[in-house]
Amino acid sequence: MLFNSFIFIFGFLPLVYLVFWWLPAARYRYMWLAFSGYVFYGYWDARFCLLMAFSTVVSYCAGLAFLKYDTPRARRLALIVPVCVDLCLLGFFKYAGFALRSGQWLADHLGISVHLPVFDIILPVGISFYTFHTISYIVDSYRGTIRPTRNLFEFSAYVSLFSQLVAGPIVRFRQIEADLENLGSAQRRRWLIPGVLFFVTGLVEKVLVADTLATFVDPAFKDIGALSTAGAWLVMLAYSFQLYFDFCGYSDMAVGLGYLFGLRIPQNFNSPYKAQDPSDFWRRWHISLSTCMRDYLYIPFGGSRHGTLQTIRNLMLTMLIGGLWHGANWTFVAWGAYHGVLLVLYRLAPRLWDALPRPGAQLLMFLLALLGWVFFRSPTFTIAGEVLHAMFSATAGVVPENLGTLACMLLVAGYWAMVGRNTFEFNHSHTATAWQRVLMAAAFGACLAVMAGGRDSPFLYFQF
Image (cartoon, rainbow, N blue to C red; front, side, top):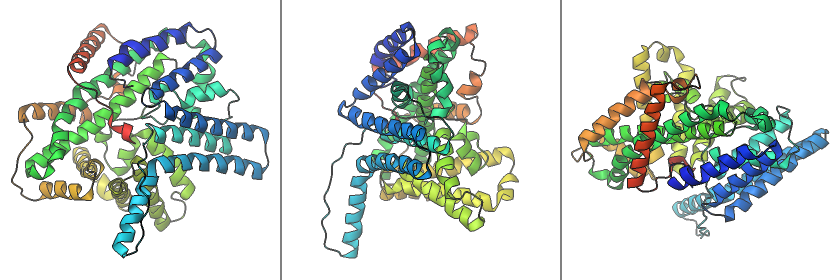
């Protein structure tokens, strides 16, 4: 079920909302949120609800173990066993086929006669995100950052929360623990306006901006070799903004839906194309993932505590794993390595970056991010090479059709992403003036009109 679908907006959401606020106590609201999350998830493939339920129960039992046992050995077992279970599930469904294909390729190139099995495994939607939720809960419980809940329905509501279940943000339990505990006394009217504002703004970002840009990007990548140099740059500009507004739009809708149910989901994007350097970019882009990588990978690896070489190693390992998390493809690993190198270069020579004027630093960082998106968007290195060759050598070819429309969209998207206010800045007061309400109503109507005349458009991060 998609946020940008009529069945969600006019069917699922109103029903869940009305029943939720009709229920009198927190325990019933936990049960209803958990149930609605499984209905929402099962809309794609009900079989995978069992997988999520199993992961939920394993992680919940780990939390109970931390409450019951206090010996170091017991606590280590309560940490290691469930985390390994979650990682094995993720590894099988997301990476088993990739590992076998890579192994077969390596064996063929080494001349080793071996025939590895080929599995056609369906990737459960959102498995990377809810696995991160359960693992972060287990690790934070082990560290004593949170006190595990004894309420199975509260924990199930957290894991299966439909507003951020399939594409994030990666919400840690401690970030919404207080709101979950006070769910029985939450005030519906307090968060209604910001909830609607965030949801509609995210819908505009997805339907009117990202999906419009997709009409230029997707056809171009089907025949990437036909693009001219100008065409390749235009397509990658369009994809850079498409990806941002698609994922930021989803995150903003998730925040809005959280508000509608009394849950404050944290910000996931803070105008990343305004970043001045690689570190600044990762403080702004997919904030929930970058902070998780910092807290659960980079710092445990040693962070920057043991000298320059160790810091470089830790940065590269973190970004390589972060790239692989995005997808079972070597192009994602290359994308992670590319950003790891940028972070290392900035750490080694920060004064060179910081000496640039702000507009120049922002433009440089945007162009560097754009080059990284070539690997992120390309399914193979061959296609990535064709794109880069077209971009950096004088190549005759075509440009996308309807160039005037594309130019207008790039101007609008570029201004909004690189100069204008983001959704949190725009809605900082959590209130809406009369003109803002009229504007939101008009924008919502425009989105519905576009949705009525088009086809279903899944969010790009569903594949991760």
